[in-house]
Image 1 (cartoon, one colour):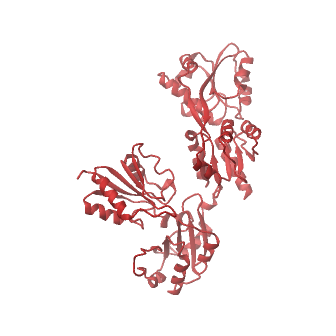
Image 2: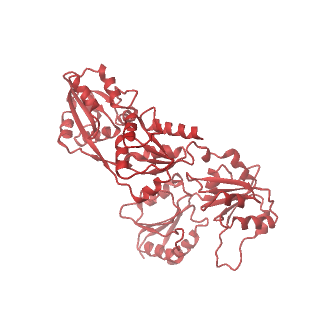
Image 3: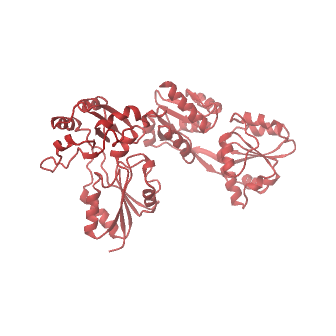
Amino acid sequence: MADGTVYLVGAGSGDPGLLTRRALDLIERADAILYDRLIPAGALDGARPDADLRYVGKRPGDPAMPQEQINEQLVRLGGEGKLVVRLKGGDPFVFGRGGEEAEALAAAGVRFEIVPGVTAGVAAPAYAGIPVTHRDLSSAVAFVTAHEDPDKPESALDWDALARFPGTLVFYMGVKRLGDVAERLVAAGRDAAEPAAVVERGTLPGQRTVTGTLGEIAGRAAAAGVRPPAVTLVGRAAAMHDRLAWLESRPLHGQVVAVTRARAQASGLARRLAGLGAEVVEAPAIRIEPRLADADVTEAVARIRDYALVCFTSPNGVRLLFEALATAGRDARALAGATVAAIGPGTAAELRSAGIVADVVPTRSIAEALAEALEEVPVEGRAVLVARAAEARDVLPDALRERGARVSDVALYETVAEPLSDHVRAALERATYVTFTSSSTVRFFTESGGRVPDGARVVSIGPVTSATARELGLRVDVEAERHDIDGLVDALAANAEARG
């Protein structure tokens, strides 16, 4: 038998940040990945393009792939000498049937390893501010499945022992049976007045927690419409939620924010929003197409040392010009004799990452403000480079030409439409905020049939973007005072806080 290895990998309880470094490394290297439904969003993004990805989970309403069939696939793929990742939500050995898969592999003589994950019974309570153990409240914790094997002739759970258990009870997969669980515990002697909590979608942006007593928790969860996945906690520590809840107190918790900028640039904004508690819907309406092979770009790079002033009107322009310089065997030293101007702090930050500190950065991130800020810089008769997008406004190069500058207006890239998929359109319908970071994102979003849902608020990065949005029939609810990503996030968070 070939020397393959099957890794039974825990993907954590939902938050992508809980994926371990070991799990991410194996996903990157895997020849084949068999994955479940409840794995973190983006968990497979690092997989090799040629990896064999197989969904073996259960979708609501669809029959699950039999466990025996999953075992057979693992044995066969491992036996073929492949590096196989069996990616499971939570921890593979905590109600994850990982033990059965390991048994099948061991019986077949296939090498396997276990990569533990953060199980929902620990992570969901922690994100809800509920310590499953506490020096004063609970010195023990028991993990219990409320969804037993239906083929068992009778319950394997000792309800009398659970009722007497001197600590926190954590029930997995028990939403539908919550009323029965509570009744059995109370009937066996557990105090009906004991604190209890149900944590729905634990560690995810849409997490919410319903609390009450053991006697009333089932009714409260039903009234709140709690649905799986959820864990239920019974014990004195459950009362800590009211004091220690932190995830649900973040400023954008419960908000669904659509990001319409190009996918390559969306990650930083998405991380900022997610860090404030938002559920982020990536709906890229544009795509950046570099034009580095164009003759004017090649010429500008060749005579880069001739320019007395170099103006950058976007972070993309910075990134692409330095990419063109690198291709020509040059680096930041090529700008040593020039005055360097950036349209705003975001562009200035991109320059700093390339080793350049901008000499001129206006207080407002618009072309008019940059033209005004450059009035003290001598340009008459001098060569000036404006590195920008093909569709950018002519305000800056026109202003410099009027002052006698010899302007090279160079389009390093163009912004093109990115069609919205049906999946993205459906996700957009849940958005409470839709963000626009440029006029092109607004224009292409509307041209592709993108719709701002009823009741959702439009957030604009600045006045030029706002003007375009209004021209296209959108109402702008929030406009950033600082016309960069940080300013947009601050404005959105302030608006959400004001709305309560």
